[in-house]
Length: 158
Image 1 (cartoon, rainbow, N blue to C red):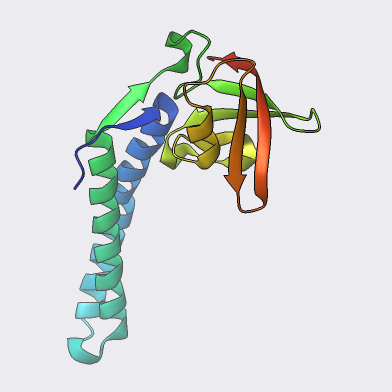
Image 2 (spheres, rainbow, N blue to C red; image 1 turned 180 degrees about the vertical axis):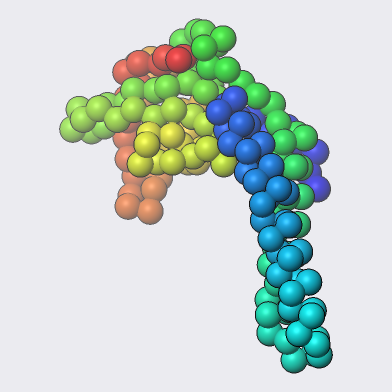
C-alpha cells in the first residue's frame, strides 16, 4: 500500500470514518450471518448463497482495508485555517470562463469530489492547472470536450 499522505477535509475524514464503522458494525455481521445460514444448507460446492456471501465478505473486507489505509494516511486540512491569495487544497475558487460565466469550485480530496456540487478532486486536470495560481491568472485546461480557458476571479478559504 502507498505511504504518501492523503489530503482531505474534516468532513471527508468523518464520512470515511462513518463508512468504515458502518461496514464493521452492520455489513460485516450481516454477511457472517448469511454465510452461517448458507452453510447450514449443506453441500457447499453447489451452494450459490454461500459463494455469494463469501464473495460479498471479501468485498467488504477489501473496502474496510482500503478505507482504513486512507484514514491512516489522512492529512486533514481545515480551509478556514488557511489564508493567502494562492490556490491550494481546500480553497474555493471563482473562475470566469471565456464567456464571463462564473464557475465556483472547491479543491477537495478524491473521495470528497462531487463536480455537480462544485467540489473537484485536487488531482483533476482543472485543479492541477489552478494550484499555485493567484487571482487574475489565466489557466488553460484540456478536457474531453476540448481546451477550456479560465481566469481566476477570486480565491477564498471557508
